[in-house]
Image 1 (tube, helix red, strand yellow):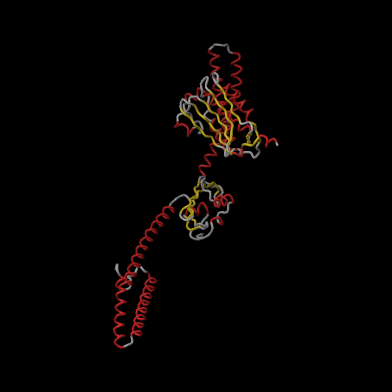
Image 2 (cartoon, helix red, strand yellow):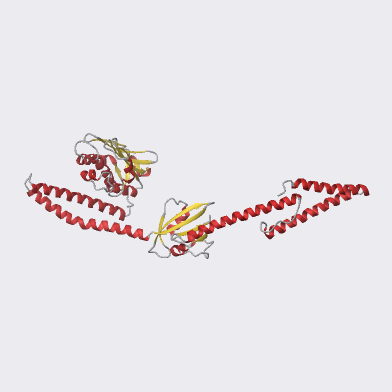
Length: 436
């Protein structure tokens, strides 16, 4: 490439004017010769522009540029190099796109590429199977005009894609889909839809199994417990028969507690949260929790109640009492004689809080993320000794979810634990406002 083409071109134009001036002076026609030289240079430049235009339309970068010197030669060479680099970059980009589409085409999940307006740019074969889309026939059509489920349209138009969305397949209502949307580039969207029918079916089977087994075992255990109570009243104190009946009674009671917790979880999962919400003062409930702590604890406990009595809690009273009772009884079980348990109810500008804090044995950090899992036990032997079922915190979690709340846990071994039920601020109302 020529680097000083403008100097050559300036020299060429100067030489042309010099020759024209020489002959103009010689023939006493200087203005005419200078004007003619300028016109000739302009016409030559126009011819170069014409060649450039023809070359660009013929496919610059594929054909060699026209022969030219000076500034025009440099322009031709620069454009030729830029065009070739552009073609190479476009080829690499197209190869990447083709590779990506080939990868998506082989996926079992539906993949749909959408422009910022929500129109389909590309979809794979699974999108035809799961969503009923046809490529390339549906290219350019709005997705919401093809997938017409109202819930999906609201999800797609909301722009809030933090959570996955579940829906029935438009092709087969028996197929359940999990849909996620990602945003890339300039507001382009990439939609994935996965068939989760098997997972949903297995989850429903699990729920049905737990509910049915719990229900079927409840009656036999009630009968067994009744007869054990009769036998226990007839057995002589201190005998081997009395000790055996006592152990059987304790184990039957543990089984009854487990079944009761399983049935509670099944109900929370199966029954939608009620729209009816009542307003409760927390002070009487916290006094009841104090009595439950004293009854559940082995030895004495100090119970401190810190209650903002100007605030009432809105929600399902039975469910909330069950959640708070689980936390309070857990605190009683995992503290020692003389330890302090604190019950707090308060609110700030954004949330309302119910806390159960203690200075008991505490929990190792690695266990905290899993405490709300069903049947998860920090220490199997210790949980058995305290009579826990491993379902209490799972029940608390489900109840709080039904009240748009969450459970937060802080604990340090040897220094105690704090279980905090966090509610939206709207769940706490002023007592005087409620009374009015």
